[in-house]
Each structure stands twice: as C-alpha cells, then as structure tokens.
Image 1 (cartoon, rainbow, N blue to C red):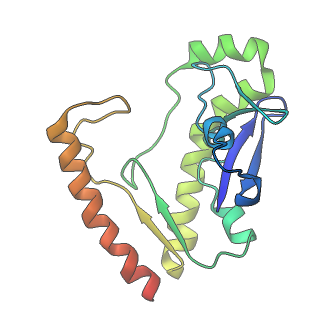
Image 2 (image 1 turned 90 degrees about the vertical axis):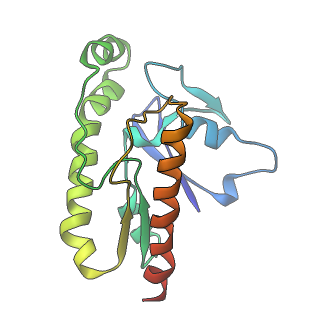
Image 3 (image 1 turned 90 degrees about the horizontal axis):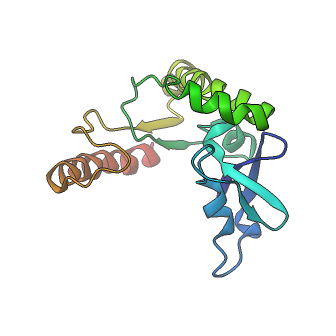
Length: 170
C-alpha cells in the first residue's frame, strides 16, 4: 500500500507506505487529499502536504517500480475523459506565493491526460492493467447529494467491480 502526497515546499511527490502509518494517525491521508488553493498545506511530522494528484495523478510508474505486476486503476471519470485547467486565475494568484507548486497545478491536467494515454496505449494491450471508470456520472460532481444519481453511480461501480476478479484470475 502506498499513498502519494505532494510536498508543498518542493512541489515533488512523496510516497508513503504502510510503515509510515500509525494507529489512529490519519495525517498522511489528510495531507494526501488537501487541495491547493482551497486549503493550506496539511502539516504532519515536519511535512507540509497537498493532494498527491498534483504531482502524480495516476502513480502507476511508482507501482510498477515497486514490483507490482498488475494494476487496477480506479477513475472517477470515464476512461475517455480529458482534464483541462479551468481555474487559471486562482492558480495565478496561488503561484505568486508558491511558484513551483503553481507550475505543477498548471501542468497537472496535461500530466493526467498523458499518464492515462500511456496506460491505454502501452499497458492495457499487454493485459497488466485494468482501468475502471464510470461511463456515465449522472451529472454528479464532488459535492453532489442527489440520492438517485448517487445510487445509479453506485450500481455502475458495483458492476464494474466484478471485472476485478476476472482480471486478477488471468
């Protein structure tokens, strides 16, 4: 198990393993989901942490370098979804104080798209990667509370999860 976070000071990914975890200490998890611009970096054990998706959105290369031979990539969007930067003004203000991290924020959408393209072209055909992502998000976004749409998305995810067993048995 590895959790990726972004070091707010260096704008580089940090990979934490379960040996970094301690009972009832959720600092790594809190830091790895701390969103730049919206939040201040999460302070934990001398680190200032942000969401790992800023510097390594799909950390498949790290997983392979750590010895994994099969990966299950779970996306919150369709496998064909393309990310784009839509918060340029907010990032510009943020980048005035945090230059390197601001540059990473501008580049993160391209990095995500490049990583997903690499997975689809170079790994899916080999059969060592399974990518699961909803075909339809039913209009749901991060803060949605529409129970009918959430239930539909849950059912789609439940069906997609059945692919995992078949993949692992190959």
